Length: 109
Image (cartoon, rainbow, N blue to C red; front, side):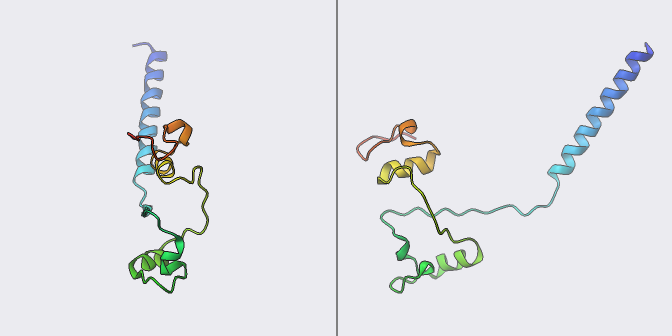
């Protein structure tokens, strides 16, 4: 075998080996995975959860989740109508893209 070809082959094998080792080290890191719990309810204002200061409703389990994690304080909606707003959250697409523009529209996901 020609020396140039042999050197190129050795270089290629070393490069592949180094790449595999690099990606294995990146995948084997023991970072703690994020847990996300998204609670969606119908006609549910923030005042209905005691974690947001409600004295009327007691929600100890939701309060525990909020105390151990992050309590969502601000939001923005691209469509304030019930069905289209849910479609935006579930698809990640604006209403004019996902096709759900009002509550009469049939949404097929």
